[in-house]
Image 1: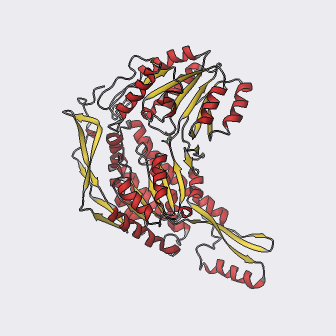
Image 2: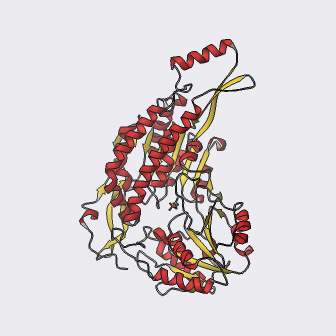
Image 3: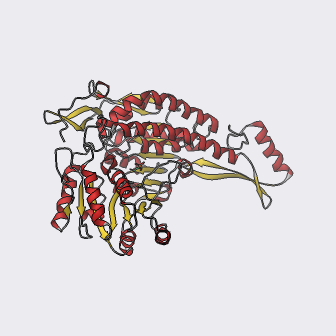
Length: 529
Ligand code: G3H
């Protein structure tokens, strides 16, 4: 697990640190003259020191006011250019943006590897998936708009029903998908006519800087505002103004709750939240063990388990647990650890400095209460990694049973009665997804019927995952508020609004004239192709 002496291919080497002092407010790329925060890579060390990647502005509440003023002015109490713009013109801006974003693929991918340690293959996937998400969002919006391009009549009233923006959206993304998950909030929020303030996460921040100009050149002033700094120093003051209509956050529930608490007008604030989860796998006695092992490896350890959708606890039936443990532990020990740009790297160093020690503390807590580390390499600790430990048997009194580890450690719990995992899922604070492994329908059927009331996606013989992005992504309890998918996100960032008029000659003539004159961008029967 040496991460200091490897040769770095020229394509992925950093020529010099990126000191970015720009931010985007009111359509202007401004130079920040205040404090800055250095950005280090915990992925690669030289002479015992993490690599300096560059720096970004470390902004304070002053900038919060500037950003909020810009976004509020651009919305202009519903009169703004952007919220009143024709749908096809907003789509044109989004198309411009995506074209301007594409040439930055290599820069963004390189920074994804250096900043958050995502392996090369997954880093490219994150960029490409984001481009696809934007293009799919454009198509979904056209489809939605086509459905609205008509009048309905009920009880003598004509109605022209559309979806309208909510106002000003604050977007905060996570470090594990700093591009994709943030854009899965920002893009639908924008296309529906909202104005936005976006603050990148603390880790995975430099990779946003190559895109600032693309945002500036693609949207009218004030529609996208991008600021940098710590959440408590900027996000909290922004929310405190009371001018935010939507908090869109992918991250931890504690941050979401703390921010909501700052809003003076609670019912004004809509929430779209993707939060933590503790997705379980349930391995039934008739499961195909090889398949279950393969899926549980990718489910629990892709990107070192730093995914909200990761399998974070495995319930294995007592009849097959010994065999499963043997094959699973061997599979974990055979995983390739390496630097993100190396071709075969599956496991990569951890971006958060404190994470290896935290994972180690979970292992120590579990082993002090009776669990064993089953795999030979499990728990081996370095300055920036803790090799995945397979812990068995894990019990309720251990921290790793309840806490979202968000890192490389896999707890296994034996069960003999299916009520044991079902009770644990029902008792859990979380309710995102589950994976079940087995084939006997007499057992699977009733199990699915119960799980459908406890989580939001039941994966049969496969790991949990968010994609394809066309499917709903949501969760119960502390795992989510609102639903995201290409289509659902358009709904989440808008509200149904309609124009109604009684069916009489006087009104009908006005309606006809409104459509024919194209005096309104809301009342239109134009069919977008
Ligand atoms: O961190 C949570 C992500 O939404 C997971 O997405 O399942 O595609 O890795 P994924």
